Image 1 (cartoon, rainbow, N blue to C red):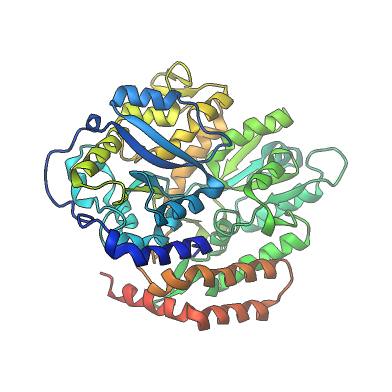
Image 2: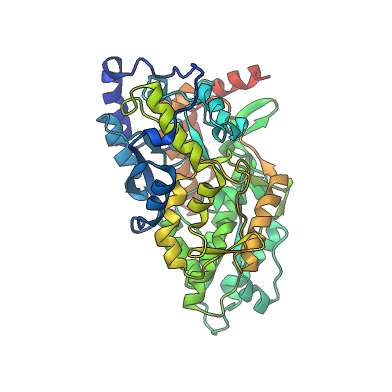
Length: 506
């Protein structure tokens, strides 16, 4: 429910629709011919657009290593995360995309359904069986990336849920608190972190929860599942309805409204960026961060630089009215597509796919994830021990994780880590434990044309109303008015269209 196309994106689509007939490659979507896979070394240079999540472009060390081992040169356009979609849309409109383009996230793929249908990207599904590593990608995840049942994308594997609490264990120990087991226990921790002087400086200068302007990947959606809210959509009496039409969603809003009124979270969270949210946690202003538990490794290192006595811990199970629950993702973080404007023939496509097939070999997969053995990590009984020089890793290795294909579930020989930090290992264990308490979004296999056309704009009504309710700017009647507005301007059509697919599903 969090797809938000920009104005530029919508203009891009209009431009594309006027030129598609003249420009679409007639071979697009073919790929059904069985032949021996082309060798990656047959191509001189492979061009790639990738999302850059670090402040600076990476050093060439990993790229040069790949070029030497694989036998093809790489031309990687590193686009900063904040401007990635804008750059992508502009390149799509001018047909200047490189041969392989990574998307920013799953929502971006959803917004590209019409360009995909209209031949802007190659269908690759029938070819995957010809590549020994690409054929190991999970069919159920590939189906989550599909458009009209056809596969156009390779994916980066992601755990189904990394969500949980990262909290100040030293504060909890000082106050005699255990990891919260219930919503009431969670509230009590936030209260004590706000009013119990957890840092022991005699001042009331801390608060419980740090959050940001994101109702999905911030804290709201995770806490909402504690209350029993469906993941995106839920079944009520055999009919699918959006999560915000369930009482549990409103219970979550009331919980956040109470936290906000009592000063137990950052007051400006609806306009807080992720970097600022993390800084509140790292600097010791806030005691709880909700998100990917694996982030504890970098957060602990950065917090220790500020306060050597800061100690973090992680926790994933909080029981609510429906027991212990956590929302599930769709099994991939992003995907890579292959534009028909830059790859002219199936033979060329197979050469490019051969490169990505190579990336799933253990030697190269571990290079992208961990770097060079002896420099960025060492092996201890077959387990990765990363270097303590995190700045070097961030400079040399971390950006290249954006071009990974597959992951531990699809690559035999993928190295596991020993971060020399028990809490990081605990985070990995709890991430796996989340698999037993997952709540899935039932609409992922389905499509609504109205949602594709108007869903993002309509969702802004609900997002704004949620924030306004939490801030005390509207009451329940005001929130319901926005739900009614959502329904009248297309939301009811979205419900009806999803339910047609839902009732006909096997």
